[in-house]
Image (cartoon, rainbow, N blue to C red; front, side, top):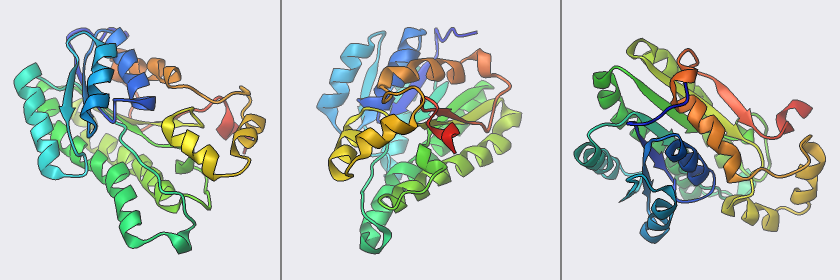
Length: 249
């Protein structure tokens, strides 16, 4: 039920943080992992950890032509695409009145439009194969509001609705599309948040029943579950991985 041998997985932003954590889970279950990211050196370092024929492909996931080249490269080198993890993301922390239109578009393009571009590119191969798994990475801000992250919250709320739309459209093609909503995870992105948002670290610890920040390794298991046969009848779900943060109301 959790065997991914022979499967090929593309993980956008898979060269660090949650993306790398998920990639390590997929590789550990037998999948060949393709890391798609803009930072070539960082991606090559991730590939060294992933092993099992892992591949780094320099990609700008906000650019349609770059995404098309990614999928052509994977088709040529690996022969198939079974799993897509849409993980690439950024945040610009400003209140709505201070956020510029270009900053808004940058966040939406990186976090949400990229998921559309990659899912759109993955669909033909998955349909032809008769099966596929797409995992979109949302956030606690898919659920909650935050004064300092209007564009990020909008993009992550959009991820959940995009997930549901794709799940509904592609269920008949045996393609399951689900979202993972991370809580507060210790990554480069949130380390910057702790510098910019006073009291954030202690606030997260107080609210999280598990009484700790998450780490990228916490995503290995959910990646394998949603990418494998065990989740064959689960689609359109948004699953929190947050140490209980979201159950506090």
